[in-house]
Image 1 (tube, rainbow, N blue to C red):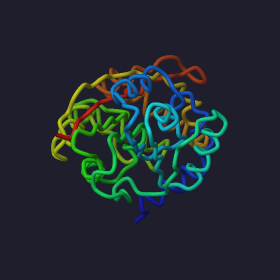
Image 2 (cartoon, rainbow, N blue to C red):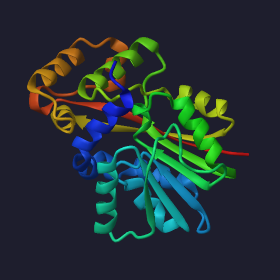
Image 3 (cartoon, rainbow, N blue to C red):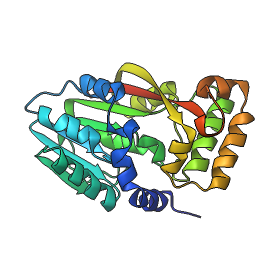
Image 4 (cartoon, helix red, strand yellow):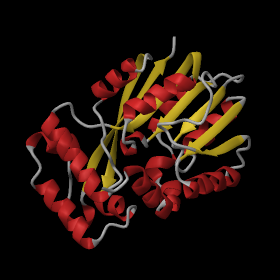
Length: 256
């Protein structure tokens, strides 16, 4: 059986530069909302888990006293470090580590963020439990990830579609399911904001070096999707102009 973490590391190592330059990851109203919900204070120490291209860490770093960017893939850390240098954002410490076994002492951080990564984690409950552990009392967690509908059949289809494009995709959750995971970790859920991202299917597939056969399969799946999945993904156009929605949730939680 393939180790899902090893598969994630392999694929992100291969596509590190694509994620750094990806418009979806680089910014937008969703990243602005994440920063807003962080309510960062200048004396805080912050951690960005699964930093990827480093966009969240770079956005938060100027607002806090200390910023740690953690990722499981060395090549992603190198790419994020390069982007921070390119943007002249100093003071970020880059650390290699696992989101489900954070290499930090209890109560180390005032703020923990994680953006567009948790759908790759094999055990999201363990991840959020670890976030709760490393947060100080009064600390804040802000999560952004793609989300799926509450209907199980439609959610299964959306995750299958995503996994065909990227086998390291594990499972995206609904916003309600995320709220329950956060509660089970002992954190208090706060504001939730939803964002729609329209993706050109060809460009989305290119980011993972999909074969023409895989792209064809993706188009066939979308054509045969259930009514609930079609409503959620809202495909438009055909062929090279085909696009669909990926829906994201941004949510905050506090440690009492």
